[in-house]
Image (cartoon, rainbow, N blue to C red; front, side, top):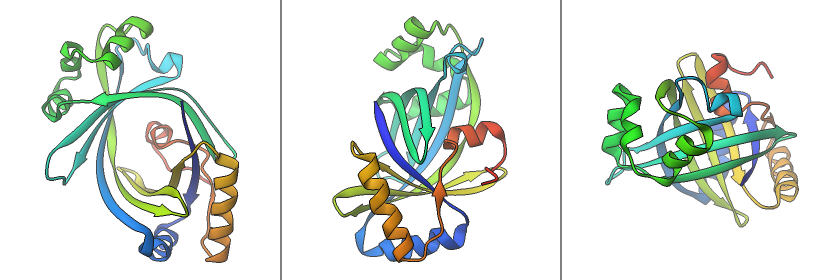
Length: 202
């Protein structure tokens, strides 16, 4: 089970302002290429799940994961979902861009679970998007400041995985207010925004 605090930043100006304030706590930048799969009969989405293939680009050694996300709940800036992931050969990621069915041949626990528990017999690609993640270590927590790049626009978000969401949420809200950074609670996941084909109106 993954639990995160998620805030949306309204525009690039707020995003840049936050990055400037957080610059003393900066650790690294991760360039993510995210692609999503479902079963050909929508076995995953019909059960509130999706399969994510993520390639970390611009790294010295290519890195990739396959991740099953299920039963998401997002309310008042706190996200909770079931999540299971494993490392994936980057060559498989690239092969799946042309033929998602290639993943069926991979012997991984996540893939076996998708077949056995969700009944997927054939994969189809849903498309995807890229995300630039600036990682910071701030007051004992890891803050991910994201710039999701969709075909229809860009969305800016702050995420923090934590077992104490209410404490971290309050801490972040105070920090944003002290530094004059506009924000709101995230109301949709990045994947939900991608599937909607438009940015959230609020």
